[in-house]
Amino acid sequence: MNKRIFLSPPHMSGKEQHYIAEVFESNYIAPLGAFVNRFEESIKSYTGINHALALSSATAGLHLALRVLGIGEGDYVLASSFTFIGSVNAILYQNAKPIFVDSDESWNVSPQLLKLAIQKAPKKPKALIVTHLYGQVCKLDEIVTICKEEGIYLIEDAAESLGASYKGQQSGTFGDFGVYSFNGNKILTTSGGGVLVSPNKEWIEKAKFLSTQAKEPFLHYEHKEVGYNYRMSNVLAAIGVAQMEVLAQRVERRREIFELYKQELSSVEEITFMPEIEASRGTRWLTTLTLASTNPYKIIEALEKENIESRPLWKPMHLQPLFAEEMVVENGVSETLFHAGICLPSGSSLQEGEIVRICRTIKEAL
Ligand SMILES: *Cc1c(COP(=O)(O)O)cnc(C)c1O
Image (cartoon, rainbow, N blue to C red; front, top):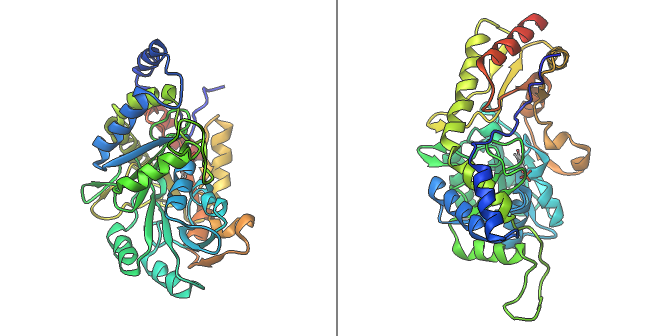
């Protein structure tokens, strides 16, 4: 049997264990310490944002963003429907109501439908959580403008788009909050982790307070509101510091992998690749494509036989049983993409020979 090819496995730089050894020498095996600070600094300097908070996951970051913005029971939160559940679970943690917005040709939130969703909402939504799907930035100019005009907070789910940019500015830095994920399958990984960023110092300080059990500033333990245990471990932050040193290379490689797939499969009329909007540079976190008439499962099963992992595209949130009762403004785009699309192995450690083998399997199956 061929060695398994995974969708997006971790890709260490080699420096991780060196930094972990430093953590052990210092004995700060804790959710605080020099590497947590260094990790936050590296995010700030790479993305150009002023404030960052290292957390146990991106999901935790989204939860804290909603808490800090005062979103709770009876409030409405607009969100991308075409996304991963981690993007929107926090809306439910806060007992708020999601309103899902479908995609346009960019695969990301349609600005037109976003306007329509705001008009149709039973009451004015307080925030929008927008996903930069598969590392491709959404139509930020239009979406930022709509949110500003309507007085709606913008939270960017940049879990898949760390290192992506729009008009030269890093994804995650356009809104009131942004979150990056360091889960095991993302561009970079700390095995699990997330970073919440914001241009607003008070908000990040408040999020930090809530992420460490909401301890009031007394020597004894005094609590006035509910908090969480969401901080990142210093050991994992050491991995993160080493990973951030190679972010540019990792994005570059994922983009190269996309181009290699495109070359190999250019003669196949069945296949259309995910587009990239003008003035943007996505991460190509996963190379994704749609098939004109073939059932994606046919390809997924053919690849599986060769010990190659592939997946359907995200199933839109408005089609999930969990959200059967929730409001959606849809046009059929994400549903159509879901039924026609697949994600191919895209890890930055993927070899050219492996790409050729994957493409050969796809062509044979077609
Ligand atoms: C991975 C992912 C998340 C969740 O990230 P975690 O760090 O695992 O909590 C949220 N949104 C999107 C779009 C993701 O891909």
